[in-house]
Length: 499
Image 1: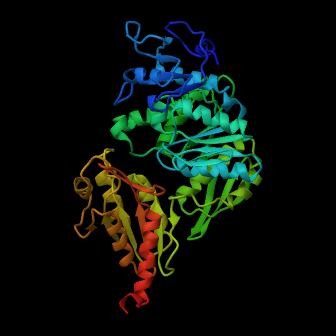
Image 2: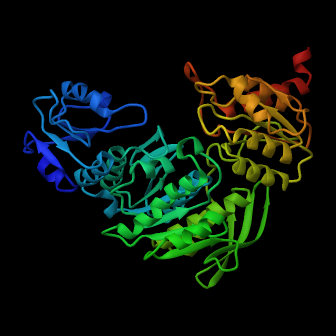
Image 3: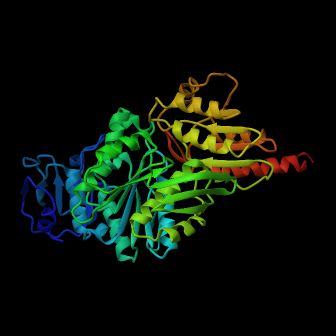
């Protein structure tokens, strides 16, 4: 595609060196530049892309787009396009380069603090089940035609996201479910995506190290919904959890866009009631579109009722027949690391969950409490280089809703694990809890002390298969470690280990 044509999709301040060059690819990472690429020099929080322009050119970049003034630079040989905002321009040009793929797909975007992954996962399943092949871009994995790959981030950069949407369209998919993070919204990664439906799940404390305050966090999430009114092709619908106080506030923000509310409130357009669940699944009544339905799902917990109702509202807005979608809800597959049952010894249960915010931990523990366990033993930690204010809140939540708490390490990154644990421990009211810096030791201790009727919850990492420390990422899988500990306990309880 000619650079001149690409530049027509966005606002341009100036072009030095002409625009009659052919662009065969897009990149914003100099390490992955290929011959023929247009390189976007983006200014980030840690690095400025202009420092990598020469590297990009050496690898074959044929043009550069940036918001920086490079008119007096010593970078010869390629056109330099100056734009008002490099991320806005990158998203617009990426959409144009791949032929505006979202216009050919039914696209759902899911944002919120908790529930994004599960809701997007359910949306994809419902679409697939009724014969509308659906791609997935989210925290756990990217699902493209013929490809399932581990996710590198919840919402990719716009050049990668638009390429994925193009692959979905070209590979015969008819829909796409996207998790949309607050970081992505602030950085315009979903710019150029035409949404059929946008979902707001909830808002609780998280990422304040990035956003600074809950108000700024809310403003970031709101961008997905205020952006619906600016779409040029589709009239997207806003699907909002009106039981959430921030969701209720969001209702006043959304102007000129059809809104569908969901929750348990009497005025919700998709309303759940008569909820009952056990260790194998959940049933509830759904009132929607003037009718009542019985919904069965293998997922457990009130929060998963909200996730399921949100997904049903979304797929209905995307044109799926509601009754068929409800039937498909009965076969929703296990979401990796989301209240995932660990197979093993049968006289107690063990679950792994991604809960890494105070609210998410409370929701999971409340759900497990309703299974009427003898005791709940909770293993949790707090991530390093992230919102420090939530650490004592996590400890307080674990203590309030558990019978025993074991504090441990969870992706300390560049921080001292013991210091993180000390900060979290300030949220405990009682000093009767155990702590192990080594996460495997903490999990083993929880399993070793579990008695018949107990529930063990290993919280924080969920689907992640690594532990991230100052020295990098090291293999670590909560499900496998917990299963190994359970097998060892089973072995010891039979007396075989003592022979």
